[in-house]
Length: 369
Image (cartoon, rainbow, N blue to C red; front, side, top):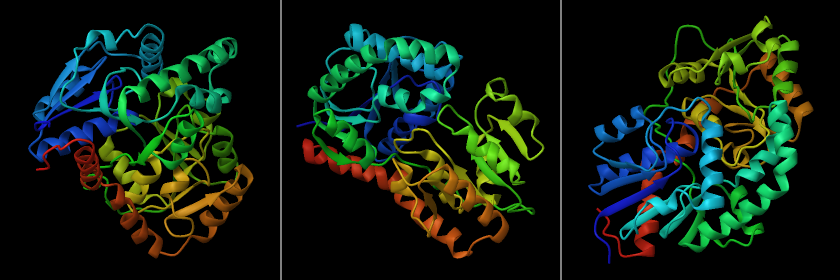
């Protein structure tokens, strides 16, 4: 029998985005339900620590709070150190309360391991988009990393009573590694924050995201078809020169969430051509702001976007470019924007928190508030 303490073990908390967002949102929702919540991570930067403190959530940082210039590289270093040497797990004491392990970087006994994606699968899928020096390193050590990844996956799963993934796509991936996945729980979104906010000028651009998983060739081809594109995400120094100089593309870099909401809300549609996406926050953020999404009919986004209702799912680059041009010229029915908002509410943080609490209650007799 457990008390009302919930511990969430997290990957390095270096920002509020990506795989650490579920930790931040769920810790807040559990606290609102009067659970005592603590978060354990290898590294927690100062602004995230302050955020947790404002939510009355305690946090333990194993390795300090030094800012990291490259968050992806910092995550990989922590993963590698844990997979090879158990560096992080050796630094924490035995956990006795209801523990949710949302991490790939701290192996520990838990009621549930929330498996959010094997790093070597992501690396294999995005290798063409990596800088040349990273591609060379990856080509030399990829086989070793895959062996290490499988070993790590089995260790994490073996230390938890159940394994949960954040998409059916990942359920299939982990099952192929011999892991029994009992549930799929999608990542949460704050749909009160991500909501439609209109400005006076709307629908005169297409919005997209720039990151390591983005298929840049598609963005370039769309600009060549005279489509006005706004691009957010990443640093200016990382963007290719053609993107910064193209007259039909406006590169915004990293922007605040407040500005992002307005960009989503007032775009004609959001286009998301990706190399790898186990779940994908971009589609549900856009839909939550009432804007349909054009993306690929695969992996995580194919589970969240409803083709012809909240967006469009295509098989390949050629179909994506062709359909984007058609939508840009001809538009679409206004009912799609209402359907988008309705669909996104299924991923609201309150709904997802209830699923986690019920799941924990089924594993152990955790008292539901």
